[in-house]
Length: 454
Image (cartoon, rainbow, N blue to C red; front, side, top):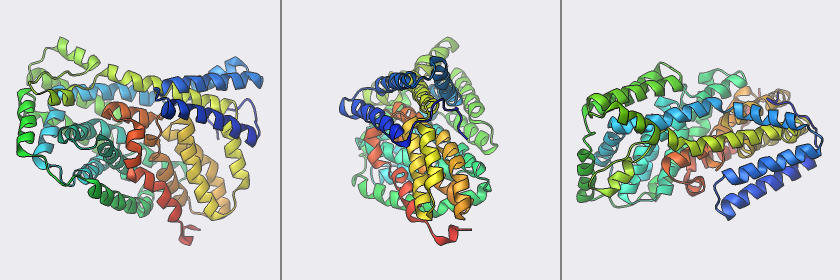
């Protein structure tokens, strides 16, 4: 059941104390001292290594645990490099500038957060990837929020909420397919069942975002200043839509995200060469360092100066540390002790569903990895649900409601680090406003009904 075999079997109390000390220390560094999460994560790794050595686990086993933990995120790491390139190539091809320009034409300040949430949700369903949605339409919307001088925290919360609604409800989503597959539920039965909790969470979130939206629209003069500066870049042309269209087509044909993003980036680069007239030597530099805008209007320069492989280094380094940390939690037996105890103790239906949600959330917090949260929780609770007479679709729904959507709310998680880096808004800033993500696990626990018992 566990991806990394434990080399020690601590008691539940011992595991809980170690977990509490380390998570408490990390929270103090990040929240109390305001440090970047790399430092407390590295300190946590050193503490776990010390604990393992004290319990007579060999250093080679501890090192292997770290490496195996880091391996689980390698596909995401390669994808992050490409997303950095995607953002910079979409800048020089005009794709992101034309999205921002269109946004200024269609959206003012009225109902802004609600519109951002709804549009991001629609794009998220069509793309099936929360990270790609955030890195494309999300970047455009956060730029608009800055231009409108509205709250970046609420805007980021709306973007994250919409992107993860799409991640849950799209048949193209990796997490949606994983949650249904891991517990042997038909994909479309799974989507139909999660809609019973997802749609209420969407409606409540939309109302909250509409209520918080500013009551005055952007003035014509303000919008015109931004649109004139965007036109000054020379990047607004009809062909700028092609990379976005290509990405959507690839998604509809279920081409893997890595290949889809790579193809869209290459096409965007070709457009930049032929339409924008950029030299390939300059383009390759932009692929690595990102695009730097040089218009006469500084706010637009700030909006468009983004992207590049180098912009992903912060994210990638933290992901490696976080997953290595998770590997140590397995090899020292801390996480397995929790999961084994749960299998033995749970009997009542209500407590089973609540515990499933708590476990999925806990793994997200401890390890920071979305897929492991779904896989480990699913594998742990399958026999428990079967024994209790609960339908598998109740388990797959809870995995999505408490596993998929919680990852972006953890500062050191794969999604949290990526989103904070791409949008330029810290996880703790947007967390209170990621209403959809916060509501989903609450509604899934409250939703339980006897009809879910087989």
